[in-house]
Length: 401
Image (tube, rainbow, N blue to C red):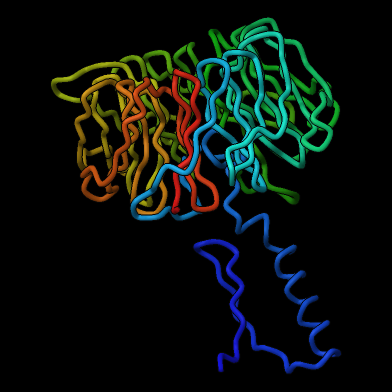
């Protein structure tokens, strides 16, 4: 007879402990232990996908494994195109569409749970923190919606369309607007803490970079924004002052991917760049020798490489350290979807409507699914499932049947 109980919290996390003897006074503590274990680490083991790129550094790496051959589990039809990435928290999927509706969907069944209506299109990916979903719309309104009541908690008006998704640092929420400002608001009440004016649209999501404090105290947090003014800017989140500015040579629609003291992004100048934050300069540049097209997608990071697709119909894998080419994969259409890494595979969509998975070591195609509609949105991964939206307004969920 098996003397151990297995508690499986996700595909990556299992806990084993010895079975108590079948007596009443021993069963109660065992049950209590299970509850403590589940409550104490549920948030870190369920693999929630809380924002556009999955974490504050925008690396696009999932902490949830996927089955070897993901199967279509369900689809959900929104009222218009889906260009944003879904957020998935505690069994609910949150996605915005161009019909101006934020949808909350049951992750297990694909059934609609509730909706929140705005007055304009939603292109920004929702981001979730402490029971509140944050996102902007085409009228420049930034919304904070309570997940429990399904109602507005607060709103903040900017002067331009918001496509940038939100990021968080402590009690602050950060996002960019097409009015040219990077905003920092109080996460609880929406009050403006500071705003920083750039020289162009702020299209991408700001990354959060933490550095040890120079003196006694907590680590210092910085917002890193790559904008349409062609600059990478490092902004102190505490007071909104700029500490670094690096000329990227062309405007950038992508969000920065951050690893230690390096930032990686593609530009509309047909380059992929590795920027050294400690030196405040570009460490390396990569440009395909023949196919020179803009990069719209954001990079994703493996342990040693970066992976990014371009409008040149190619997925490029480069060394993080040197920018040297590791491999390429040629698709049959341009790529604006930012790849997400789950295990040993990178998943992304193409404008031809193919949802594909590539081996991150070799670049070989190992799985694909034809959606029949262009994909500009990026995938999200949670609890052994992967989600992607298409321009015909369908949200797909894949996993193990």
